[in-house]
Amino acid sequence: MKVLVTGAAGFVGSYLVKRLTARGFSVIGVDRVPVASDVATGVVSDLSDAAAMLADAGLGEGDVCLVHLAWDMRRASATFEQQSAQVQLLARLLEATGRRLR
Image 1 (cartoon, rainbow, N blue to C red):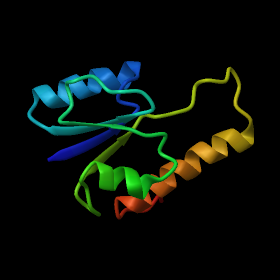
Image 2: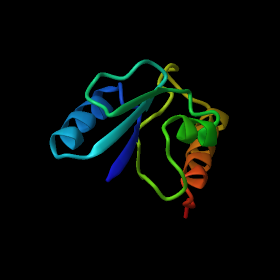
Image 3: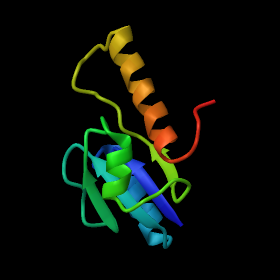
Image 4: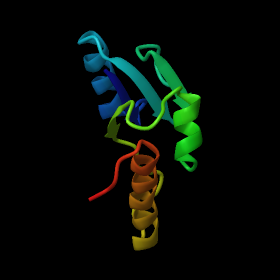
């Protein structure tokens, strides 16, 4: 099974990638910075174009299990608009994988 992990270079994401890889999953790691070599495929993306990012990873609709750990932590306090943009990004990512946010 292919597992796409956003935020794969982060603290939780990097640990999860190692665990999934050790259990035999094919992991596609996505982050704003290059991802460690534990992943089958590493994609550098800010997730602004989810469909293009999935195409770069060689994935089509329904081909992947999504673990979304990416979150913009560069600001100490995020405004409602910034948090809303993060949730909308997740919805676009799910839509690109052929799933919906419910």
